[in-house]
Length: 219
Length: 234
Image 1 (cartoon, rainbow over the protein chains, first blue to last red):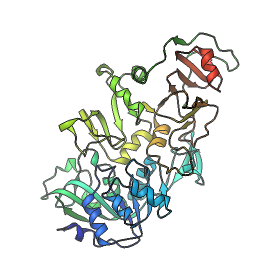
Image 2 (cartoon, rainbow over the protein chains, first blue to last red):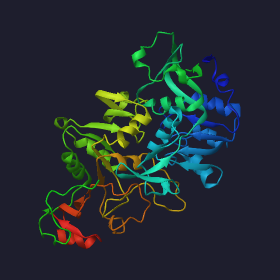
Image 3 (tube, rainbow over the protein chains, first blue to last red):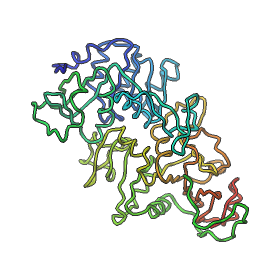
Image 4 (cartoon, chains in turn orange, purple):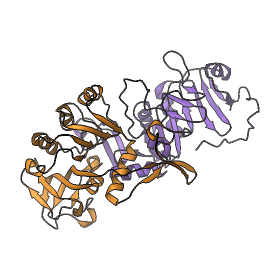
């Protein structure tokens, strides 16, 4: 049942300790800062977070990590010039890291949303990131077995939603939004604008409302 | 994925001395980028890695009709955004604000990596720590115990693009060749590199071995003395 909430605090109120939370965004583009701030305020802890990165500077996901709410990060590119909060926690042994090649991260999330139990891919074959994984020679190449990444909750940012929960995004801020929306049991979306049913051209809908549970307008 | 040589040469045939083009002057980063740009076939779909490979975009001509892909979800990427053009929702893989060209398209991350992984990109240009004689690539991790590993899309690009060009200096700061018999750094991909553009030479990784297409400021013999991999001329 689709719900529209008045505040970001209400939108994230159901996130439990120990949840796996997908957070949209590539760097700051598409990062749902308001929802992340609300999650921080909610006090939820022992979280496993799935994101491409591990937070930048002193905002958003970086603060969630700084405050010790994240037990484990699943990401492709944690180390950046301004990832100091992740770096400190990692070096102190206070956060677990599952490092995933970016295309595997995206495809594993997609697989979860599509009900796929796993897939073989050449990416990572022969590297330390494939150590211990099943391999097969398929289509003339060695390939590595990868499993889906499911989540309890996804926090994503879109540009507009209509009354059915259909979403459109803006430019490269789309990134992980559509696949995370499909992969999580509960998808919470912050948008800049809510339009009435019929207010989005059905040909241009990017995420169909079936994947969306909660919408909150911010800004 | 190794490049097929244009002339059949058996593996035991001696290099033909003087066959590669030799220029007396070393080549600078910008001229090397210009050379890579010139070598990309018209109409190609191309992904340029972060750092030195990004320079290649400065030398692609309108006549070439090249479409640039950025892994975070766009085809038709334009130059870096300046001033009022800067839009936080429009960035490249290095998280630098960029612009969109007419005919651009946006897509989600799984589609963007399907473009790479599905073999739809003609060329990617990447930086490297090391490339092996058989085209293995090491460019994501030094393996140092205190290093925080970060891989991003490097393994997908290396494995998925039809041609993988590497741009790097031939030698490390302490004078060791980065073209090596086998990589000592953790691998990004196995047998994936097809060409290596360096400040001293352009190398083609072929089924016969490493072929030198041209040299800059060194002779073939001087180049061979720097590199612990048997080189084929021409």
